[in-house]
Length: 566
Image (cartoon, rainbow, N blue to C red; front, side):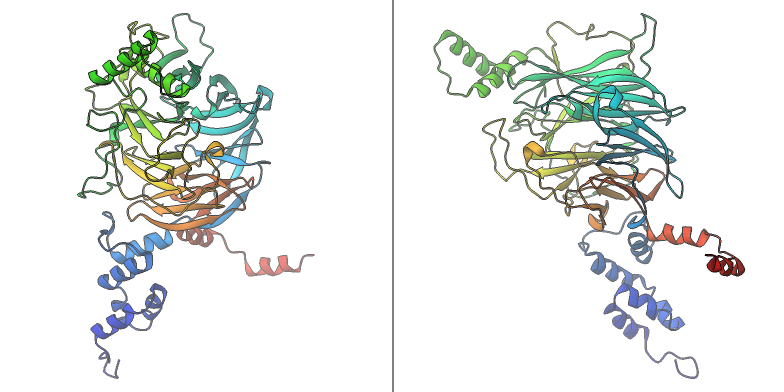
């Protein structure tokens, strides 16, 4: 400015100069004078800075909750948990899974060292309890989940046994005194298990029918198994589902539909509809998933003619033994599969799990509605209320991802399902159920709207995995109000913004990152677990500054005195 206080340069010229600067330089220039300060807060300037710095497509609107472009820039820069603040080394082997309590005060970790550890989530994290599961013949622990009121912990593990053993067990631990309350068999072990209510949990069992045909039974178990009354059930069968082509049900979880109409973040609002992947509908040209409901009449009749001709010797099978077994299993299931029930109640829950229909590789997501009368172990057991012909339960929906599913997670409002998938090559055909197509190294993070059963957003990418189909393992992801995070085999955890679909941070470990979890009460805190046997805590730059500012500064004399001590 001149001596009279009049600006020497017009605002428009300063604005164009600032457009050529980076965000840090714009903020530094704003400290020069009041005029530059005003221009450095211009909304159009920060809109340009935002799209350029974060490389967001120009047709993506600002976050619906944002008040300004400047504040939105600060949110993505300052509130992402990307600063490592603590490393926990109490585990002695690979750490496989992390889970937070709903209050955020505690979290649990599972490991190849066969312990379940429960931690106190203070400013400095500390170990509360370590449960060694080796006395129960466990090989390792793999998954945990707190019940809704944080009074019980579900811990899932794998039994010691032959290399190809698939048996596991679920343990329920009291969080009042850390006592082991009950144990429930779980097969295959990667069903994991989950809570349905505060005192009942879902487990699985697998029954072989043929060489590549089986059925999965999902059980509802009372967490307290010491009930003595003969009139009180401690277990009840929920569903019995046919598995074809060596597939099985795995990775069960429950979504509460009560908040579907009021999500924290509405994805793709007003956008064109995404692709529909519901194979359980009656749309023409769609493949039929496992237990997806009665087949059309012409399909039934064709199968019957094929089998009748085969039995009469009039037809020679041009199929392999596996293909023939699958056709026979499909025929036998026709007319013996109970169609989906539809409840008129507004609030209900969905059971979600991975499955398949072409190969043992989990390439589909099965969805089954849980009705109010199924929410308790009371009532008929072992399918007593079921007609003799209704042997299997049909699925309500099947979502096919055309790839190997290696992780799933729900948004906090349960409306959106995020899925880690390694894609099959385009146009690939599964000729042998025991030889699925090769899978990509790139991991696609897909997003499905459970209200509309449609894919929303484009796939998120950045993370990678390298193991082949037969060695592929689960990589757990987690979703907060604004962010989604995932582990990866490339020794990093990743964080994306849910609205803008951009990768915001890479979190380094020394080995595979198996699990990530946000604090449910503070999305600016993230934990990561790795094969390097560590758990790392990450906070946002904003919270790190706040915590550092809150620390009491020592008196100058005390600081001098401490420095003189030997």
